[in-house]
Image 1 (tube, rainbow, N blue to C red):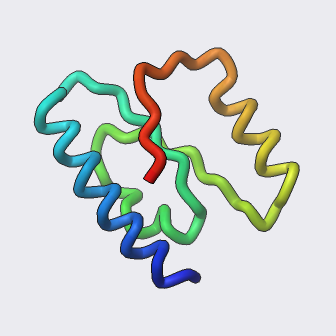
Image 2: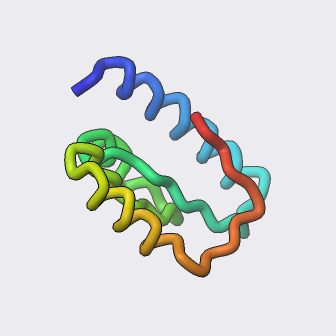
Image 3: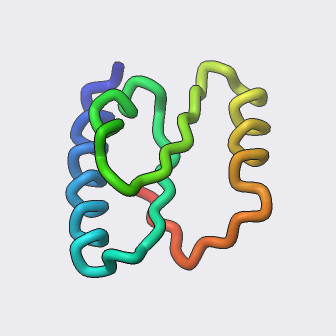
Length: 78
């Protein structure tokens, strides 16, 4: 596990909480690593898509399938 990933998830979790506070009806989808997911899996009203980069192209294809047909208003890359 990258220790920097823990910090990134903590910062992103704070941002998600603020978004939920200001826009309670926002639908949030978070693409997250399988280890990092364990830190935030209990966050309410967040759809998590777990991305296992160790699976390489299989993970990329699974991600594409998971979001196929979805429309997003914004993308935050953190």
